[in-house]
Length: 230
Length: 252
Image (spheres, rainbow over the protein chains, first blue to last red):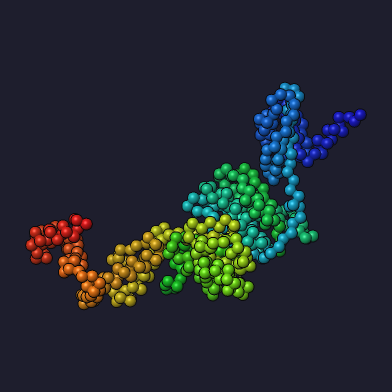
C-alpha cells in the first residue's frame, strides 16, 4: 500500500490552493498555491468562505462559484469536514491557455503619456474627480496598438468615473520581462486606484485581452502590465 | 494677438480648452475621433482643428453613396462625417470604413456600442461656457454692427442660447437689424406687408391697423407705465385708449 505522504504530495504539488483550518479559524496546513494566494486574500476570508459553503452534514461538497483574488480566478470550491475540529477548502483554478502566446499586430510608435492624457481628459469630470499622477517620464515612446490601447484605458478609467480621487502611476517593472515573437521586452505597469469599491468589468478584461495587456484587479485598484516594445 | 473670428473654434472656457487640447493631441493619431454635444456648440469647427483638408460628408449621404458604390473609399486616408447618429446600418458602415480615420460629430444621444471611437470629445452647451458665450456674443455683435452700420453693444441685446451658437447668432443679428431700421425703411416694410395682405385677402382697415397700433401701445405702456400717462403723452382720449388696450392685450 502507498503511504499517506504519497497522497499528500498530490495536494502539495496541486495547482489548486488547498487550506486546512481548525475550528478557531487557525491555519493548520496549506499547499504552495495557497501560500501564493495569501498574498492577495487573508486566510480569515477563506475560512469564512469555507464555513459559508460547508455541507450541512459531515462530508464534502463542491460548489461552482466564480471567485477572483489578485490575478487568479477560480471557478469552483470543494469544502469538507469529517469532525467538528477541522475544515478544509480547495479552490479550483481557472487557467487561460489562450493568453500564453502573445503576438502583436498593427503597432505604432507613440508616447503613452499622450494616450493617458486623452483618455483621462475624455473620461473624467475634474469637478468630481481629483487626479494624482506619478509618471516615470524616462519611459520612451513605445510601440502599441493605439486603438486598442486607448479603448482599454477608457474601460479602465470608466470604472473610476465616480471616484472623488483617482491615482495613476506609470512605471517600468524592474527585473520583469515578456517574450514576444522570440524577443525579450521590459514591462511597463500602469496602476490605477480610487476611493470607491470597484465593480469588476468583463468589458475591461475582454478589451485588455485583445490589446495584449495583462490586467490585475485588486480591491480598489487595477494594474495593467504590457511589454515595452521599442 | 490672434483676432478670433468664426473660422476658429473659440476655447476660452475650461471645458472647451480641454476639448481643444484633446482634439490637438488626438489629431496625429491613427484613431477615430467622435465630437458630440448639443446643436450649435461648435462640433464642426472643432473637426477643422483636427483636420483642415479632409473630405466632409453628412452621414446619411455617405451611407447612400457607399450603398450605391458611388464613392472611392480607398482613395481616402481620413474622412469627416457629420451627424453619425443618422447611420442606419452601423455595423456595415464602419466595416466599409475600417481602414480610414473617421472624425465624426454626433448629438448627445448617440451610443458608440461597438467601440468605434477610442476618442470621444464632449462639447458642453454654451450655458456652461460663460467665457466662450461672452466672446461669441462680442464677435457676432461686431459682425452685425459692421453689416448694419450700427453701434450696439452686447448689453443692448437680448440673446437666445436655446440652440447655442445658432440661436445666439440669429438673435444678435435680428436684434441689431431691427434696431437699425430707419422710419423710411420701416414704412417700406409695412408697405410691402400691406400690399401682400391686401392682395391675398380682403382685409379691413381695422384688421391691418393692428400692425401699427399693437407695437405702438406696447412700447408706450413700457415707457409710461400708467394709462393716464399714456393717454397724456399720446394725446388720446383715455376711454379710447382703454378700449384699444383691452381689445389688443386683455382679450387675447
